[in-house]
Image (cartoon, rainbow, N blue to C red; front, side):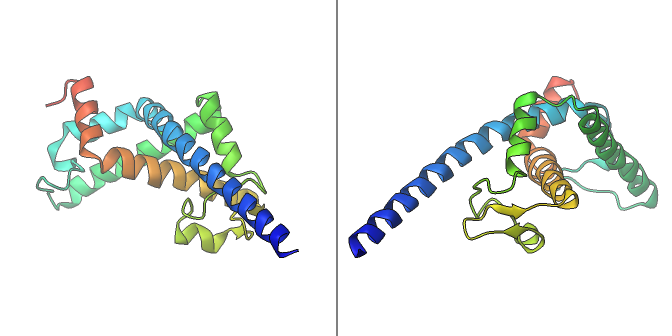
Length: 174
């Protein structure tokens, strides 16, 4: 009986490791797809942010702390959020990206526990395999919002100097 339990446990752990590997390979691929799609969606407000040095999000440069520049920055960041929401509502994102997003909000789909932030873990109903047991509409919006706004927009585009350099070169911004 113990040998059977050990065998089942080993198979379960092996399956979990294989699923984790596949998931992380796919997340890298879909992150790249999301970056390309998001840059094309927000190019006007993003370029507008880069053209004006006082609104630059590059933290290595000097940021002017004036009320006027803060308001301009606020308008452009708001435009970025609106552009993303409009494109998501139009359902014109690449189909593979939409399918991936659907897979991460589907109940009982395996997701590595490292995928979710502490903030998300506290707000989601996750089972012992770190799969969503049940999911409400506002929880779906939370997961997709964090994916686009935190993991892609902030982490991979705005706070990633190499992506900013690529966008600047592409649009001939000095």
